[in-house]
Length: 472
Image 1: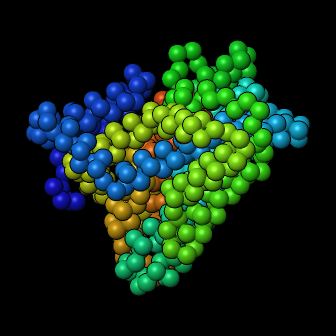
Image 2: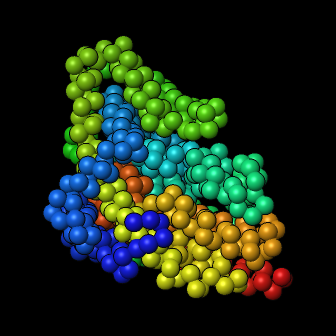
Image 3: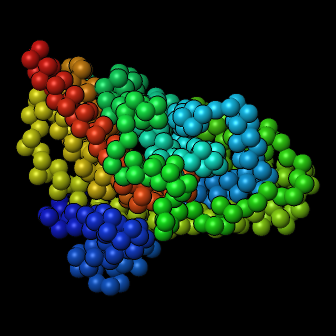
């Protein structure tokens, strides 16, 4: 099936079924598996279509990369816990006599600081702040929200990330954009127009400060944490194995905050940013591998036995298996949605709305629906950029105007909305993993805030669209 064909209404069945079942059953693995099975049966591939789908999807370089990244991250987090690094970091922060609000603001700032990778950011913020936020009775759902809403929304605003390179690459050849330099210039000029990303990041800080009041499931979760002392609801299934959450510091280990925490973090950041500058590709997986090797050597020099180091590493890998299983099924469902033409169907039934005045707003809405339904922002970019940006150039007579910037930003913002709040999204899974939150609880508590921000962004795009048409 090529990129322009689809199965009609049936093409949205698997993704829709997965989302509905996830909220009903609160079991993401079951929901994704059922959706994949129903999808292959709908395509007429029979019962064997399901294992064949898994083999084809998981035997790819992209999944191997996320698998290794998860395993190395699990190892680093396990080493942090075995050396007491996270406890040392918690103790260092506590000496600053921070309040409950300030502790959450630290997590918010940390999420914005680690802008180069939407994979590392939610895991880093969640795993390093979890002990501290637990102590201040901040619900795991809110910690996951803080980590999630400062990952992809921040990454898409920075011109020195893989997100920027990918989006710029898609723009080459559209209208007067002839090379990578011109494409990157358009991306940079579009940053102020990425309303959803800016509002999403700002909203987190305003919610933490209490300027925007809590509402919906998040309010209930925070009340439970503060009044009952439960950072997780009864019966919650944290998306992090006990092998990782229950690792105790090695007795009498001569560890330090600098060697066991700060240096590994600096290694990850320097390798990721350095490789991006030199190779135009941030080697995040390799960065975590380097940090894991460094930590292992340091632990041995600090007197921790080699067998204990290897045992800790294995425990860390086991601890991230729940996330890996969900990611494997999510990748399979995304591939199935692509094969069934889900995105093409959504675009086809909505393309009639793309009038000049409505272009930014409708582009944002369609991108958001596609991203939420498929759980992938980059896939949404690849679909929507070639559809919406040429239309914008047609309206401007191939001139690069604010309408072009707004359209590019609308695609980016819409993709981010779906990516960081869809239960099928890898970054949402990683946020739940880092915060050790029940995944569906995280999604349910975050969606009302993300949706409210999306509605405001949509209204602003509508106003801006009519303003530009009026000027034209």
